[in-house]
Image (cartoon, rainbow, N blue to C red):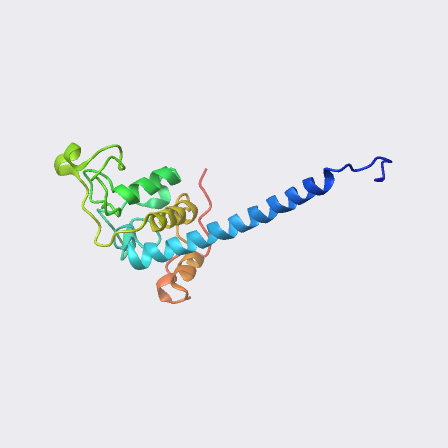
Amino acid sequence: MNHFGRSRGPLFPITAAAAIGTALLLAWAAVAVAQDVQEGQRIWTDKAGCPQCHGWAGDGLVSGFESPAGLPLRKTQLTRDQIRMTIQCGRPGTPMPHFDRLAYTDKRCYGMIAQDLGNKVPNRADTTLQPFQIDAVADYVAAKLKGAGPVTRAECAAYFDSTGAQCAKYPEKPAAPRN
C-alpha cells in the first residue's frame, strides 16, 4: 500500500523501469549529439576545409576579409536538413562544392542529375565526405554556428584552444541588441 491507502499495482515496476530507461536514453542521446557536434567541428576544420571560404567562425570572413565564396553561416535561415543537403550536394550555380562523391549521379541531390543542371553542376570538393561525416558537419553548423550572432573572444579562444592575440579583436560578450 502507498500512503494513499492503495496498492501500486503490478505495472508500477514496469512503468518505473520504462521511465528510468527513457531518462538514460535521453542522456545518452545528448552525449552522442555533443560528440557529433565536436566531430563535426573537427571535420569542418581539418578535413573539409570549410574555414577557407566561410571563415573559422562561419561568419563569412576569411583572414579578416569577407569571402566572395562563403556565406556567413551565422546568419543562415536554413534548417539542419537543408544545411546537410547543401554540404552533400553543394549549391548549383554557386562556388559551394558538393562533398558527396556520388552527387548528381542519381537524383539524391535536389532531385536532379548532372544532365539536368548543365554547366551549373557544383564542383566536387577536393575531399569528399562519408554520410556520417556530412551529418556531423551539419550538426556542428546547426548547433554552433547558425544564429550564434557576432563572434566573441570566448568562442575564438575555445576554437583555437588558446587566449592568444588572434582573439583579442573580439569582444568579451556579444554586443547588446539595439532597439
